[in-house]
Amino acid sequence: MYHLLLSQNQISIKVTKAIIYSVLLAGTVCSCLSPRHVMNYMGHEYVDLGLSVVWATCNLGAEKPEDCGDYYYWGETEPIVQEVSSLSEVTSAVNRSYDYNGMVKNKTLRPEYDAARVQWGGYWRMPTQNEIRELIDDCTWTWTTVNGVKGYRITSKVRGHKRDCIFLPVTDERDSDSWGIYWTSTSFRGGGAMDMQFGADNHITYFSVSTRNEMPIRPVIPLKAVSIQRL
Image (tube, rainbow, N blue to C red; front, side):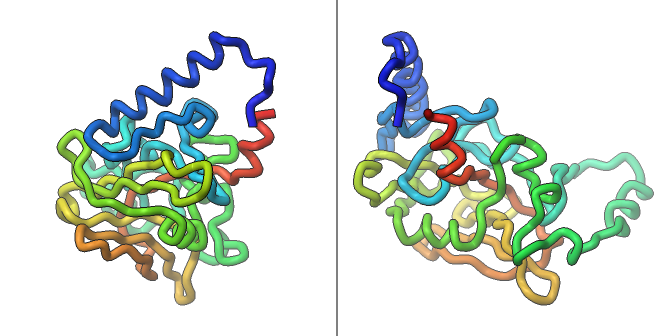
């Protein structure tokens, strides 16, 4: 909850940010106008959906909610560079050391191997499989288009947050205009990892896949961490 001594100017700034986010989602049912649920942490905005974590408004490496952002291999903290200058760079990338067991603790990526934590700092991190499950169970997923980009508007069903939402875009031309895949930080037996997948047909789930797949990331912050920031 916000401190009661906030000035009128500070409140005005928060409302302005919320309105800007509303414009980015123009044409959707969700307005995201609640100023106490759209905030900024370490230079990146997030939305409080009333869940155990708050969700970033953009993908890692993206500037707008509808941008796909950067792609990552699971457990690597630098985005994948699609253009290389020589065959030796390709060979080096394929043969680089990959210590799977050293990256995982309690079935979750260690912070130093979490791209969201390394890139954005602070308490930012990749979501776990359970947090994806929460997003699926406690939100309404509506297939829509934002500024020409297809994806899901995900609106909270939690009391006090029912006007709050995020937008997850499809993962661009690498897949299709009706399919999205995103990393979680959860490992899977046999050296794999869990991802989240969704399609235009309301098929929303998660699968175990190879860590060598290329996927974007939507960062989160534990609710307890941002609650301390608000005091």
